[in-house]
Image 1 (cartoon, one colour):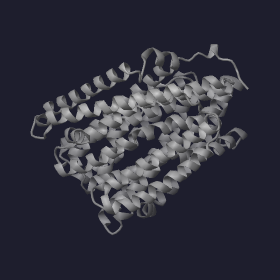
Image 2: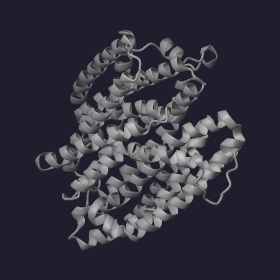
Image 3: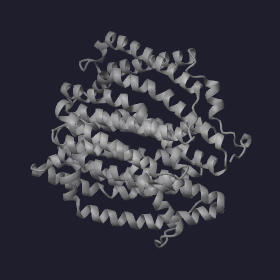
Image 4: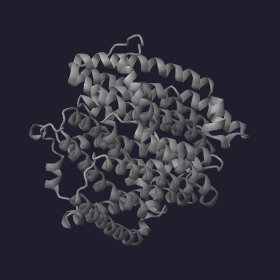
Length: 527
């Protein structure tokens, strides 16, 4: 199977999850707007979500996958199964301990990390503590899910792991429908949502466990023992956990700062949901598929194949994220208005969230390139270097957020996150190039410049059309008219961008197909 087909498999499943996510956020906006209950729920939900990224996705996609692949190469499926059971026992025990400690420390965590701005408002503070306590066990479910997903990805079974996140959105949509159907008040709605998050974690774990069994591996629980393999995993996973959660780390810093202004946390979350569509569909797909591909090529000694795979992934990222960034910058107002402006979500809310979204759009290619560059380190079992770069970007994010929030409020936090993302991207790329792990290709540079030109022309067309069709995109127009007009703008944008990109040589379908095709038989091991 070619890389592009694997990207499509994972990206397609992730797209389904993001579409349900849009439906969820639209219902959230109508039910809660950017009011105090929206702030409380998102603040409480952000914390288990942060730890999910730190201890689950980042750590195990970075550390577990290369070691699992090595076990398969060295000791076959039986060795990989034995290694997985060792890890599962230790992981389960550690997560249980972390969950108990965090539940007991929740009031302290809310007052110092999650939402220090809520201190002094007893009602918001108390509810945030209780909702976070309900949702925190979601971390345990998702961390175990991430480990099993890493096994599935290494075994080239991508779909079950990619489709599992859909169930979180489905469960939360169900809770929102029930709240709207019964006319529940905002506080009751927040409680329904919190319990739906916990239920979704259990369901997602069940889905990937069934996928692992279907792939031919039946993992049993073993008494936790710190074996040499587990020690090696921990050495790699701790820095990878910090690195993999860079976006969430920066977002929780922004959330802590934003908690001082009512509505700011919810506004950042609504904008985040929009830009997570291209970030998730492209970034997650590239990161999930690229890591086992690079690990396999490097373990087999196919250095040229590894370098080509890395560059083609960067090309794929730029091909899809440059137009997405331009569209988010130009159409931010129209997107937010059509998706959210109804019910409790006002015209003033649209202006604030659209401003945040436009800035996130500028950071989008950087955020996704991180996903394409980090596997170049992880596949070589180097998790410390990306962690150091993460530390630098966190310092930049914090300094800018603290400096800019008093001046431009929520937009300052978005600027800080975008700047931190691009800093991390440049450090990762420069280091890979300096080490000889990333090849400089003038054809890639030339195609990138042509893609930028195509994206710029597309943006000009969108500016003209959005003004021409503005009457159809107002809240006074029927919802179907608004959606149709927005879909029309997106369709025209895609036609312009792809048409120009292929016409001027920014992309070539045959070239992409050939370069993304796996050809291990043609490769030869290199020193």
